[in-house]
Amino acid sequence: MTPDQTFARWVKLAIAAFLLLFIYFLVADSFMPMTPEARVMRPVTRIAPELSGPVSEVLVSDHQHVAKGDVLFRIDPAPFRLAVEQAQLNREQAELENAQLEAELTSAQAELASAEATAAERQGELHRAETLVVQQSVSRQQYEQQVAAERTAQAGVAAARAKIVSLEVQLGDAGETNLRLRQADNALSQAQLDLAHTQVRAAQAGRVANLQLGVGDFVQAGQPAVAVVADGIDIIADFREKSLRHVAPSDAAQVVFDAWPGQVFDAQVLAMEAGVLEGQLAANGQLADISTTDRWVRDAQRMRVHLALTQPIVNLLPSGARATVQLQPGDTALAKPFVWLQAHLISWLHYVY
Image (tube, rainbow, N blue to C red):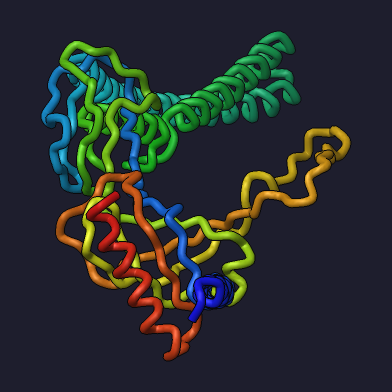
């Protein structure tokens, strides 16, 4: 075989290999998509106190693992203890005011009974005076005095009844349904709740990160003071949108972490994002912003996929760790060996790069 023939043969082999690889990548991109644009995401809870005040004690250290409900730090409880004591005193004051109103109500009821007796007596005297004035046994002036006395007695009855109504309104319901006592109880419960909130607790299990809080620091209510990185992980992977046309939730996948070369982990597709930021419309009152470009080849749009490992891992990776994700859409038996080969090849290459 001449050198020209040998060269032509190698050219044909190279072209055939290129075409074979090109066809393989086209098929693999549709039925075995893979992306190195993947990360490990761990939810981060920013713990904010519900009260403002100086920090009296920090009970955790940076990078320490905490359980849900563990106390992270304490706010100086002295002013809140005083608030609880004041609320308790207000509760006792409300009880004393109710007792005083009850005593006044009892006295007013006695006054009403006395006024009614006086009014009945005056009314009897008026009836006798009416008979006597007809018989001209008493003067007209004496009769009018009896009339005035009877009206005064009736007015006294009306005043006593009005006083009783006023006291009953002020006193309100009896027992624990009393408005004054309920208001005092609510104030006491709020003061006790504020005192409990001086102990700021972890909302979920995780690891404290980037702790910069110290004793004496003044924290504001609602302002994050501690970050806790949760134990659970969420693997996100960004694929070109055309590579996901055969992918559906619950499809199998394999994940290779950059931090652990040579290891491949089984995973499952949880969900696919509904969109990206560029596709979000905002009602801003402006006209459409149409992008103008003379490029006839545009960048591929990537869409986000969420995955979960089928088996938990012992050593949690930090949030943001890099990974490579290999998907296996459907249940194609022919693709399984190629998926296995691609995933393990990438895992071995991580020993180098």
